[in-house]
Length: 218
Ligand code: AP5
Ligand code: MG
Image (tube, rainbow, N blue to C red; front, side, top):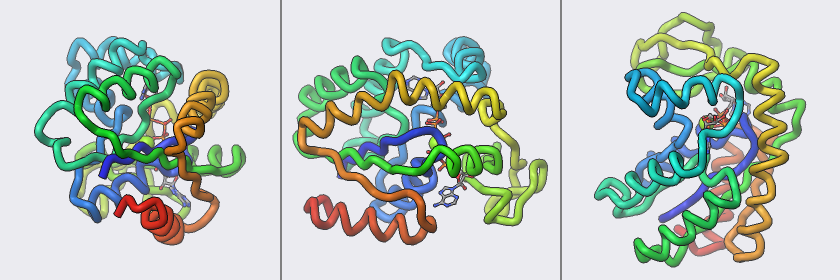
């Protein structure tokens, strides 16, 4: 299965992607996670990307397209993938269409998750991530606090630098101006599915599976 998760910051792409990747035993390819790993390792890409991410802006298209091309053309992605956070511009969407053609991937779906702006702000201000395994938690629903150990692996839970309120506002603007037009591209191709993200994690997961079933993707 080749599935793209689409939606504004904080709608729950990472949360749902991890569940689907576990269920279908295919890799979760998150461009945000790839960049955060590069930042943590202090690579050349990481050093360049950090300032852009902390400002809530987009990393240049050519860098992102190269990064995604490397992963999707590698053996790890040969049995399918959940792509989360890419494409975010029309340029990226066109480059991905070309990549799919080159890799012989005719059948894929784009799952759009919809959540209100108020709920997005609430979710991002209460999100914590594990520094070790990248698991996503919420101080509101998971009973965790910054600095406490990850319930799964014991790693340190931290707040992402780009989850500060001013940066969140800017990320939402970037989404509206540069990313939301990409949805029309996929609607026109007839591959878009939309799920209501204003529900519990479990119900959303169930509804995604129903949508995938009716689209004959599982
Ligand atoms: P990225 O890491 O992709 O960030 P994002 O798109 O802003 O999305 P988030 O990860 O913030 O949210 P999410 O939808 O995954 O929500 P989550 O599941 O965590 O990108 C970061 C940066 O990298 C970008 O700003 C950019 O600079 C750069 N970048 C990445 N890709 C790029 C690209 N293609 N081009 C250019 N630049 C790129 O959930 C959020 C919170 O809500 C969590 O606390 C979670 O526990 C909670 N939650 C989830 N679901 C529910 C629910 N149903 N009910 C209640 N709480 C919930
Ligand atoms: Mg995410």
